[in-house]
Image: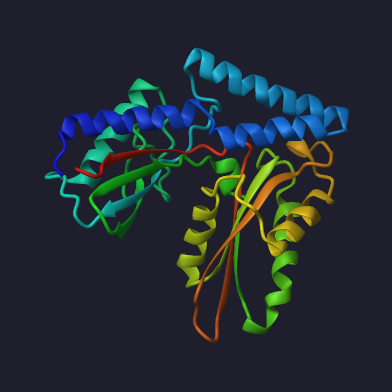
Length: 278
């Protein structure tokens, strides 16, 4: 299926606009529930402020956080979908336009010189993750990620005999993060693959709907995290995290990579689908 490249670019601009301004309903519902059950009054007031922030962002059409993040995309490209133009170049052009139109804070800098590109693009940015899938659809998910939570993430190459240490690694990561990543958190855990694959799994886990049932392993970690008492914005309380989601992949027999990707309360992401049944 062919699509108009200009229409595609503006669809991606609007996708980024939605991701930056409107929090997904599952995340918003989880925050509302957290505010309802939180008994610590300081934490409760912070959750109320977060919910007010979400409301104001949507009503005024402005990003919900001053850190509008770096631009990350997950692309599922159907093997029968043929756009007829350079998708990567079009997504990059959309990021440049979105930076000016929404607007977005220019966050992309050279890692060594720290020179800012001014438009949220540069070598390796936007970060586009491609996956070939059957069919004639193109699905693109935008997941802008801020530095406050990303900086608190961690990866460790465990000995294969140390599987039982994984929950403690998650807890240690959350303790070290404290209030820096703006809890309540969503915690993505990637187990297996390779060094880099584990990190990608952890980030993909953050896209799981919060209503997806957690297994016993995930529930035990979530319960332990919330027992830490870090609470909303690190000010104490019973809700430090809203969910823990784990993704796994087969790994080398001598290896056990484990990555933890921390996400703040603003778990921003939105998707758009092009094509489909004809």
